[in-house]
Length: 241
Image (cartoon, rainbow, N blue to C red; front, side, top):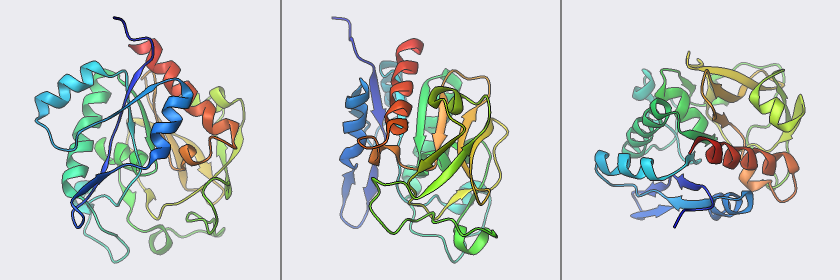
């Protein structure tokens, strides 16, 4: 029987201390709401098995999570860097590179955006507050509920993001202490916070490979732009498959 809805693979986090794989339920819920079928990827499998899974799914959602191992983007570990999961970092970097080569539809969220940039040769700030000098002190880790926006981002004119949302500025939530430093050549920077930090990227000459620094999966019930983003992702998966 032909599948009617796109199948979307979701990456997961892992706690070494608790020996548990986990994923916040918001990701599954918003994929379902936007018209897709969420499929949670295993964290441990052979590469040929992951390639088989990639051939089955219509798109991949790289979810949020912990910090990225600094040596993977050519830096020494700095004081502000938090805990990392080296296995997850290596796996997701490889997975994204496969998605990129296959022109698979991809949406990256928060850590997902940062990982995409590292996978293609870019770098990130290990700790924005100690590394990134700015005149405007934007709240990149908001003090209130994540379902509410905390700051604005300006969208680049004619970008895929601006086109699908029909706006040049939107309001977003924010819960991150790392962010893009050197943007990889494979991407355009397509949204920026008022302090100049890159908040969204799009792959050059690809159908739909897009990452955002905020968490639209936590806002979609109250914010139409958040749901529109996921609906556009699902639509891209339908077109590409």
